[in-house]
Image (cartoon, rainbow, N blue to C red; front, side, top):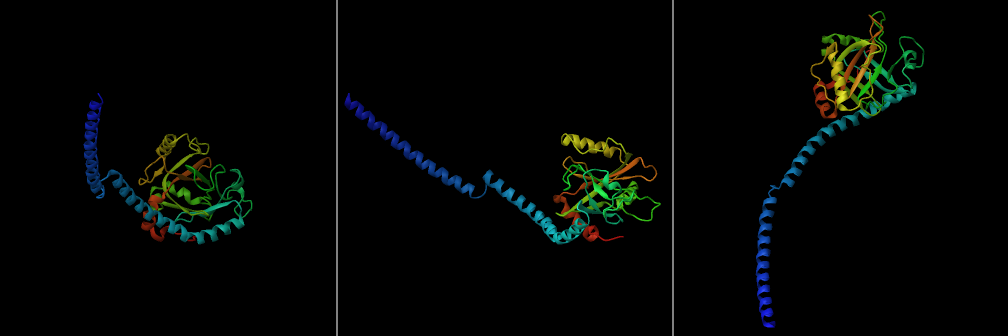
Length: 287
């Protein structure tokens, strides 16, 4: 009995030993083979990393270009916006439209009535007032729709102050020739492309600040553009875009409002626009 158990144990250990040798050698050869393949970059994981690296490098270059421009603007913006704030503590920026005579400081009060008559300098001039952001919008222009209001002085007044030139966008040829709007803030310049213009009653349902979600917002943009008087065909609607709306009254009927919708150009597109436009989008004093 004990002899059988001894012989059986010896045979068993011999089989285990031989099997172990084969497993070790096979594992080593397999590891060497696969290591050689991975070192050539054929692993999905390594290929994915390389692709992301290339993509990140491209994004980094574009981001660096925009950051460089913002850095170059810092001194100019600080001097200009500090000067505006010293005149009016409600200052949030400065707006101009290249190629027109629209150039105004922008304020934001605690309501939407004060600056209908109160001027930027603090005076009280009915039908002049100041250009101002909706009191319920972010002063940093981060909302989906940012509303900005200003009087239209009309053809009977010999100046272009406030939003007189916004009404010219009822002409398609004028819109085609004046496509960009620039807002200077203490933090950076914001560039917008004019998208479309509507002429609607003062109490329009199209005046909105809040939206349930992207779908609700996109449907709203579609509805507004569907009623537009003039349209820039180069601008496509996207739920992720932000818009600035320049709103003013119409001379022929003071119960009507002209609303000019302008799409914020994202940084991913901004470099190409600035390169193409050159100095055309720089501020040039007109009055």
